[in-house]
Length: 230
Image (cartoon, rainbow, N blue to C red):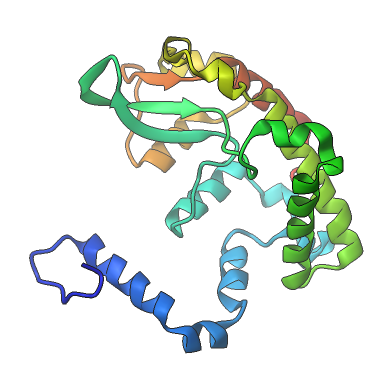
């Protein structure tokens, strides 16, 4: 399909797939562009503090929901801090329902984080974080400190996540709520903005939302109040 010629009646996303396929094959253009596309994307997000430096990054203008919205607009995943999707309702497969779950982690499973940097996989993950920041222009000493802070933040999120073996009971993950009930779980998060912007529809009190791990939302809400925005 990606190598065939498109037709006028095809959906627009077919052509988008062809364009992406062709761009991946154009190695000359990729090499010429270098890291410029990454820098342009980071600029759209307000800059990566570890790269631009604290003096050039203003945390008063930072809002994590705004950043997720920009991620979505540029085609990146917005499943950061929480996992938001629309899925078939397993108790009524004739309809779809909004699903709000715990975060997607950078490593395959929460257990990787238990041993910290003593685990070779975690150490390699941390090295990738540091090397990526340095590649984009960060000072290595600064990158080592700030990426360690980021890793510790993610380790805390991993600890909040429900273990895989406890997620086998689908009924325990089926907690139907509305937006007002979710607001009580995590009162410091602007839920209306979060749902409306990322889903592209206006959520009302009549809309059902499945919250897989309610305790995670409460813990995340409290963690965000005590964590440096940087």
